[in-house]
Length: 588
Ligand code: FRU
Image (cartoon, rainbow, N blue to C red; front, side, top):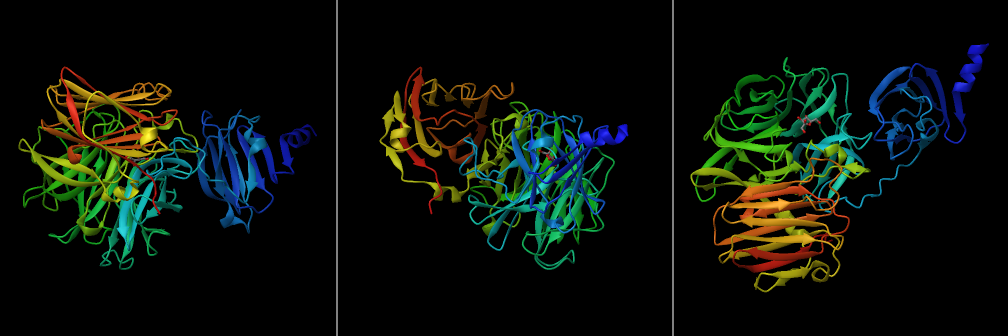
C-alpha cells in the first residue's frame, strides 16, 4: 500500500508536455513521450552536473548522452531529435542526482527548435555552430565545388562533451550552410578529431570519389576509425571493422590522411603522446607504422595534438619544403593552447626537421588552435583554419547559445628570413569579397584619431583596417581601438625589441576567466615599411603583419563596437602612409 502511494506521488503526468515522468529513487528517472513530436527539448543549466541520459526505443538503448539538465534555473534549451523513432515511441532513462530539479517540469516535446541568433558576440564572417559547443575543425575536404567543414561538436550543450562531427558546407569559405551532424558516437566511443580524403581511384573499395573520414574513437582508450560517404558528405557509413589503428597509449589521436604521389601510398599522421606517428597504406584500411617524430624537437610543455603534414613552395625559389604542424596544449607562448610547426623534408615515410633547435609558432595570439588544412583544395592551395579559442577558458567565454568560432581561412606559403624558413599565413583571397566601399585616408603623421563610426557610416563592429606605417625615428609606435564604454585594445610596435604587441586586458568583458586578460607579442623583421591588416569581428581581432609573415589571433568581448582608432608615438614620430577601412559584410 505504502509503496503504491509513493509511486503515484513520484510520478507526474504533465498534460501540457505529454511526458510521463516517473522518479524511481536512487537517481533513476524514466521519462516516456506520449505524443509523436520531432524533438524533446532539454532545459540546460551550465553549472549543473552532467546527468546521464539513455534514449530507449523498443527496449533498446539507441543513444547515450551526458547533459547538464537544469536543477534550479534554465540557461537555454537543446533539442534531442526523436523523428527517426516516431513509429515506436521513445523513453528515456535519466540518471540525475536531484529529484526536485526544474528540468522535470520544464522539459517538453516540440515540433520546432528555434536557432535564430540570440548572441551579440556571434561573429558575422567567422564560422560558428548554430547552437551548441564547437572545438577543432575536422575533416576539411574540398569536393565538387564545395568546401566541407566538419568540427568537434556537442549538440547537447554549449560546453565540451558528447563529441560528434558537426558539418557545414561552403562554396567560398565564408558563407556556410549548416548540415545535420555527420558522425555520431557509437559503441567504440565518442568521435574525436580527424580528417577526410577523396578516394578518387577507389583504393578502399567503397566507391570511386568516396569521401573517407578518419577520426579517433574515444572510449576508455583512443583508437582510429573510419567512415565513408558516397553522397558528398551528406551521410556517412562507418567501416564495420573499426578500429583500424590501435595502441596502448592514453593520448593517441587526431589522424590526418593524405596521398603521397611518389610512393603511390596514403600517409596517416597522428598524435601519440609526445610524438607524431606516421603510417602508410595502399587501401586506407590496413596501416603500417613507418616512423615517429618528436623526441627532442620543439616545445613539449603539453600534449601534442592535431597534426598536419604538407608540402609548400618556398617563395622566391624553385624549392619546396614539408611542414609538420603540431598543435600543443598547454605549452603555448602565452599560456594554454597554440600551434607550433617544423619545416623539413618528407620521403613518404619519415619527416626530418631541418632546424631542430628552432621553435616556430604559426600565430602569436592566444586563440589559434587545432589548426589543420583542407584536403584536395583547388589550384594546389593550402588553406588552413584554426579553432579560435584556448582550452584555458574555452568553456567560459561569455556566449550561451553557441560556444567558439573558427579563425578566418588562411592561405599558407613559405618564406625565408635569416636562413630560416617560416610559414606565411595570409587571409584567404575570398575575404576580399566581403569588403564594402574602401574608405581611404591621406598619409598622415601621428598623433591622429579617427572616428570609425563616421568613416564606416554605421559601424557594426565588423571591419578590416589596412595600413602601412613608416617609422621616422620613434622608439615605440602604436595605436588603440576603443569605444565610448572605455574599452580598448592596444597595439604597439616596440622598435628596439622588434616585437608587435596586442594588449586585451581592458578590451571589454575579461573577468570570466583569470587566464583571459593578456598581452601577446609577435617578433617582426626590421623594415622601412610595416604593413598590417586587421580583421575585426564581433568578438575577435586577427592581425596579419607584413603580408602574413606573422599573425596574431585574439578574442575580445567589447560591450559595444570599438569605433575609434588613435595613433601615437613615443621618442620620435612615424607616419601612416596608407590607411584604409572597409566594412566587412556579405555582399550579395
Ligand atoms: C584538441 C583535442 C583533440 C581531440 C579533440 C577532442 O583540441 O583535444 O586532440 O581529438 O580536441 O574534442
